[in-house]
Length: 408
Image (cartoon, rainbow, N blue to C red; front, side):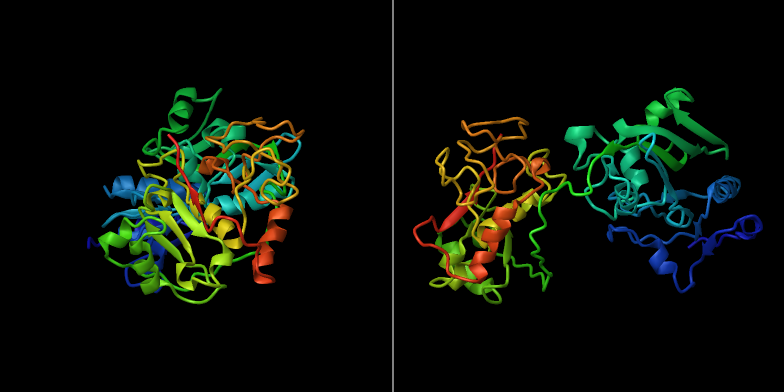
């Protein structure tokens, strides 16, 4: 590891400088992707723009490699480097919400969870990260995909201006009216234009309840096992391979949710109703296609790549039918507050109404076949029905297994 004399930086730097050997060095250099185990010469934790300027100038004068860290969620490992300086913006977490203009100014060290907490105090929101611990800076500079994009556009579509420290230590503001070419590059062009220190966002009236009902059910991860068995990996529902896999791997009792990650046969996933547990406890659990949990999966990218198949199948595990069960018949899915629906949804077609009922189809309900980005809710009636399996035995006569099929 290179030895760097950072005393020249120390004179005018108000933040914390963390060096190899310091008690918090390993924690400070760690990022979410543990594949990158890099050891910087030191880490400069900035308290404000002045600290960022000093760190940039020092790195330039000392000819040091620079990594910039905000939330530490860079999948490619850009938030840490070997033998250089990590300019860490995570202490810079200030945010000011103006409900009158529906805008927010946020420093680059914020995570989306912290940002949303402040904006939701005023019933406001903008498109942000799907994971609360993701930093606002990296996602914004990469254009930013999030739960609200179908309604409000990408994160970059709601970006009004950026304050940035350039490589020569200047502070610039980029917006539609000021340095517009730089602003164009920052809205999706990624890094290497400088270090963004704060962002101004357009906000929208939304919330505080935006994703339907909280069913009250919670799961705690009890363990993760990895098994190398090709026949189990390609098992389909009702096959001898499925039986062998589950008899060997199933753990716990009726209140324990077992999730198996395989190719899921020809489906995205499948699950069995609670009524099957009494006679075949070993068959219990969810099977989901491993590719449906990867946001970068080429198999389902942009359609079923956010892990929502697991949520859908857990609904079956609790005893829920598809919202399109029974078509336009009044009994439908045996839930009063999900309107009858003739067809399974493909994509996210707002305004779809496949029956003559006054209510639109439940395209945002987890028990439809919509794209993952479209899902955001269960209903109160579904939550009440989910409670039934833990109190009384479900009605018999329904199908024993429910599958989720993908679409082109």
